[in-house]
Amino acid sequence: MDDVEIPESHPRYESLLTRHRIEAGVEKGITSQQGLIAQGRGEAYDYLLGEETIETADEAARAAAAHLLSADHAVLSVNGNVAALVPGETVELAEATGADIEVNLFNRTRERMERIAEHLRDHGAEGVLGLEADGRIPNLDHERAKVDADGIGDADVVLVPLEDGDRAEALAEMGKTELVVDLNPLSRSAQTATVPIVDNIIRAVPNVTAHARDLQDASREELDAITESFDRQAALDAAEAAIRSGDLD
Ligand code: ATP
Ligand code: MG
Image (tube, rainbow, N blue to C red):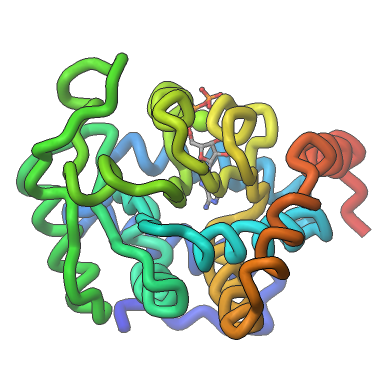
């Protein structure tokens, strides 16, 4: 692909790869310059988490997989950072769970929407929603409210990685089951989520896919048991404690 040569043995391999992908995303016109700042914020939390998936984030990933598998209509929302960092991984998650993919941007422009949709198709996506924008999320300003009526508008379960707080709250108010990936456990997005996955999206999306594959043949009862036993507040508290203690051993 367009990844630079970074030796995998480099102690900060993942972080360097991530930066390169975001930078390439900006160059290709799929990631906004604001996206660079968001990435920087995320990295600081990830550093303090030890750049690893903590146990409660893994439990959240499993609960998210169970929600996606038991949904009537699940949609994975993709913004410029998600498209730059995990395009192929998002397509794999959609395939493993039967979810749709919808492009949704904070700074929405037709050109960037189309570039992201094309980028996702280059990574194997079949249908990419988001360009119709014929549905609205109540209580948001016009541009931020746009969704596809037969995509996020219709979904009962939505995965919104790196979503901004306002939209996350508005989607939750619509009664949707919201699965959020955000490295900041204190952000409003994580705080409003039914399932907050406090982990780097680069690790979280493949992890949700792995859990979904593992749960492929699980019964409805087994899936319900997983979603019901997940404790969102405990997961947020554990992530905050891990970041605050910042034990880097
Ligand atoms: P708040 O939610 O408190 O209002 P915000 O949403 O305005 O804050 P932004 O900088 O807009 O803050 O959001 C970016 C969010 O995405 C941050 O919380 C950051 O931790 C998170 N983030 C950035 N990169 C990643 C990543 N690679 N994986 C997971 N989360 C990330
Ligand atoms: Mg936020």
